Length: 233
Image (cartoon, rainbow, N blue to C red; front, side, top):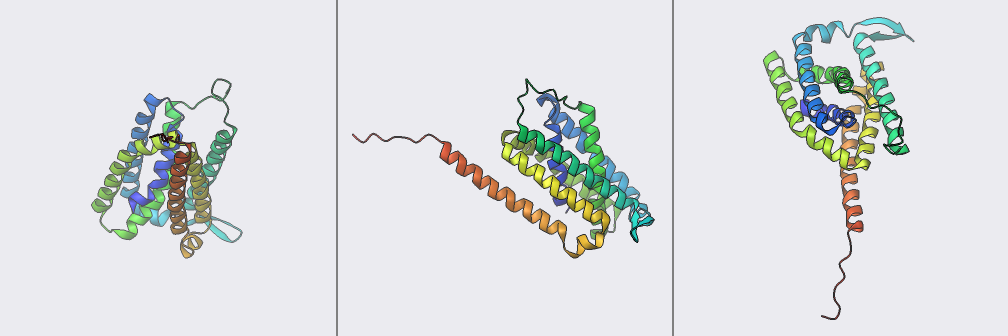
């Protein structure tokens, strides 16, 4: 479950680090995932406080209780919507690098972005861990193993996204959907659970990736030069 819930995190890290020079991309991914692991272990250490205290309403809006957990999820959802929309607009504009006046983010800005959004993504994985296991060492071990696996595959995912702009657009669309899902979950966790939004989102992501991979193979097949046979042989 930790690996499945970490897919969106790996996609985000892969997209954000593509803004850096190639030499710094791998370093930023490793540093971002290290901080992600550190943050999740800290959250697990304060698990009782997170699960109980942060879910208590601190104020009411339209007769609906809003807790710190809701605020974090709502803020994360808005951030994902904002960031993915900007990235999609930039990708569709396709402005040449030499004429672009846009300043690329610095190394530490990218790492900070990864840390902030990972705090949001961590809440889902922590709450899931609480439901599946009762022992803290088991939960910490699961988080460490999932992070090692994500670290192993993050470079390959980033390279694949860099080589295929259509996959990058698809990944940004995923982040838009995940942002909307976080907004829904932040406003009403009951609605998200009742309609199994995560299940539909992850199934849609897997199906879309499968269709896009088939499309890419079809486009490659059409673009390959046709070998002309010698009819005189």
